[in-house]
Length: 309
Image (cartoon, rainbow, N blue to C red; front, side, top):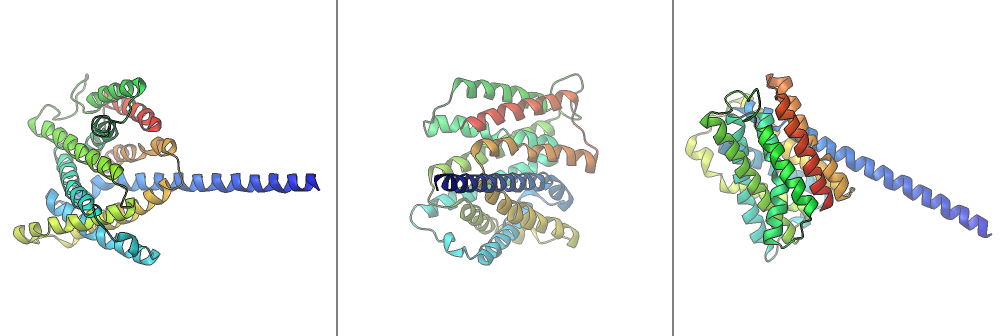
């Protein structure tokens, strides 16, 4: 009788392990798929050929519609109800998301999809630094060391240094693009910390409300500057909202719920790696060997920092 019970327990344990492994694999695939989608954002931005504010407004508007429809389909609309401090969280982070996306989209036009995306991914280090200062979080010597390595990698990745600097890397326009991107990453880091410190809103509800807030805040812009958006451009703008905001965020949040922080960290550079590849395949813009070394240094360092958090 005992051996029969042991056998049943063992079988159940094996089935649970297989189920857990299957869920983790599904989570990895979902997060990786979201990273692949995010990696094509730059193409949609460039092909839409709109100013940053117009692009952000359409992304927020289409994204809000897509996320609301998904929430309605899943029966999770009640989760969008806000109370107390939650309103302040969505209003502040919604405004910061407008700043973040506007600066990032503007930086692409001054640099390139690859460079802007790689530089933007300094955000985890900013979260760590601001978290140590603002939330008094503990940072280990290893994390600080990896941060310095990532910063060195960032310097190399910009294309400002090396035997073959990136084209126009020394121009004022290129430097402005780098500053805009760092500004966008800073805004993103603040959004992350605010969300982390205030867990009264679920991640999915937060991004939905951020799109709604962004749509409201920028509603005046298209009216003042006109609605001269061609049908072709509208398709690219709709894609930014439906694909890169609606679909991609559904994938990433569904996948992250199945994974540990360490496994998520290992997948976070799918996005910039895809952006570098897409920039080369679509526009023929490549990074130099020095820049690629810098990207690799950032990937390793940020992966270590994120895994340790």
